[in-house]
Length: 116
Length: 109
Image 1 (cartoon, rainbow over the protein chains, first blue to last red):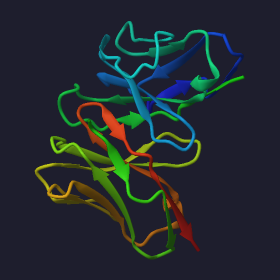
Image 2: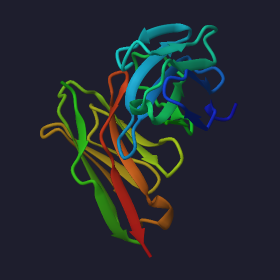
Image 3: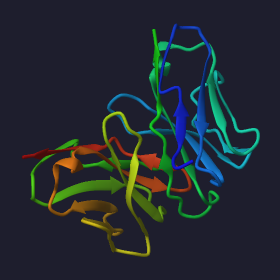
Image 4: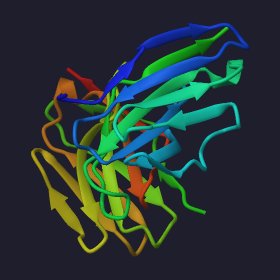
């Protein structure tokens, strides 16, 4: 597609529910990144993939967070047993090249998660 | 550890004036820097980037300056327009981006 597409744009969950956030990267982009952005803050790195391989998941806050990209294209970020502190905008980005060279990341509009 | 930060959280600019947004970084090994603009309800939008082997790079109405001696990065916007109102982030790429908290730029008519 023309840009990075994320769905849903808005998600309200009750505490304890599981949620799944989807990212459709730009076609042909090798690398895919997930970021978490709290209100009034800059994005914080969560994890990234090169094709289907998850190369770095050091930013995932807890084992309740899980990301996958099984076919090297669409990615899903899953949050189990959501907590109020998980409320944030989750941004997905993709880039053309691999992770070792300069990357211009193209971001999606984000999925805003509110946990009640 | 690495950190990227902006000097001022807010900047108010008169339409037509030039804007300067500053950023300090602490990782002297960083070799790539990026500026993003984020409007309300949208994802960050790439503005301009620069590698550490350069001191200056120009784009359309924007210039990024890199001072490696004092580990300082700045973004200059010429003839600021109302559409430039947004939050501006500098970020390091090593390879994952590390963002600062951002500077909110408000353009006064």
